[in-house]
Image 1 (cartoon, rainbow, N blue to C red):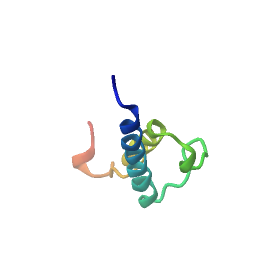
Image 2 (cartoon, helix red, strand yellow; image 1 turned 180 degrees about the vertical axis):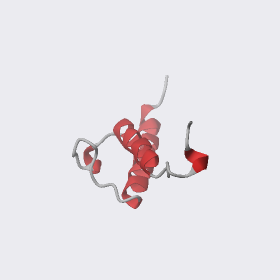
Image 3 (cartoon, helix red, strand yellow; image 1 turned 90 degrees about the vertical axis):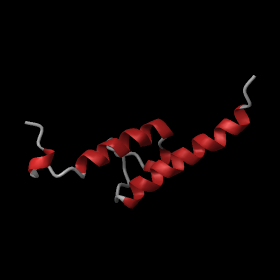
Image 4 (cartoon, one colour; image 1 turned 135 degrees about the horizontal axis):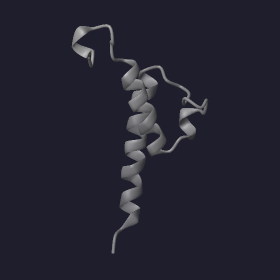
Length: 66
């Protein structure tokens, strides 16, 4: 049997880590306009991926796909 009490703090720590990264990048709202503090861990991860795409310099030759 699993101890779910130990799982919750870890999930909350991961959520807070992702939230902190988004806030440091200047993101305060999701793409749908929701406050980041209202999102769960999975939604925050999605927003962090979107933010990382925004940071890629597509004009640079090394970042071009074709």
